[in-house]
Length: 353
Image 1 (spheres, rainbow, N blue to C red):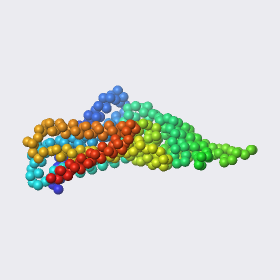
Image 2: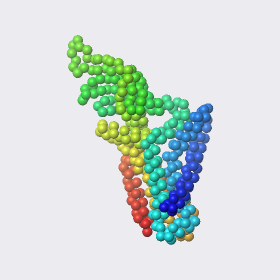
Image 3: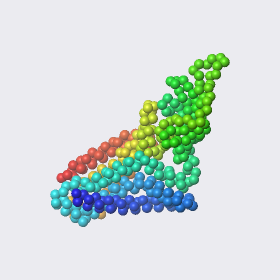
Image 4: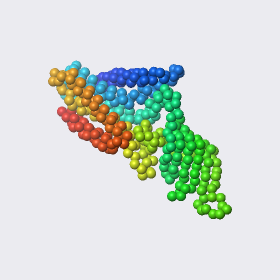
């Protein structure tokens, strides 16, 4: 147990150092990009840095976990502590177990963050720099929800607001009613249509009989749990949605018997790809020699870093290509991750020698 805490403490130290450095680099680069657009309010500037740092975690955290592990391996090997633990009867698997557990827990925590509004940090940072970003609207969205068809002329996702909403209610193939509202807002659970006009259409057309019945409704609730961000999966080629919103989108598409390839790609990229971190650490550990004199340390360190960056770049690229619909998510994400898991499993067996 003491060895676990000793190794874990040193690993966390290197991860934290790299994470802080990468965060400062990322936020600093973005600050130069928006240097001429900073608002006059100090509070807004601080909020921008916070949101930008949160957005940067998508890139900095996985890299920090992998690079921190590499630095720990090399430092531990050069100081002969790795060789000493092997001489005491520890296997490589026991030595790297703290690193794997810590990286796994942090990876699961990162996946959990992607189920929260953390995903929208970039949009919030851009909204602070660009005052017009809040007014950026998605236009002419037409979706099917249960047996109804809904048309949004304009939707403002960051404001949870929409303009010119029309709801076509059907009974089988017959149009039963038409609901029209100039404005609507999302209250966290329902879309609320303000001062909606409902036109009910009679089933039979007879002479001297009112066929259309018009009523006004002050507040009308529709589309339960149909969040504004869910609409991104219908209207954008590369949407930014959280895991929760992606699952809601998947349920809607499945219920309507529509293809949800884009949503599958989003879920795979959020849930599956982050596990490349512990898998990479296992594979790299298999190449660590028992003694420092058995390897060219600078060359080996360089090779490990390049290997980690290439793997991260491959999975990052295929996730974007899958979300963009260029390749199937199963071929682009699941199969490569499956192959990597098999390689890591074989390496883990070898580490127990």
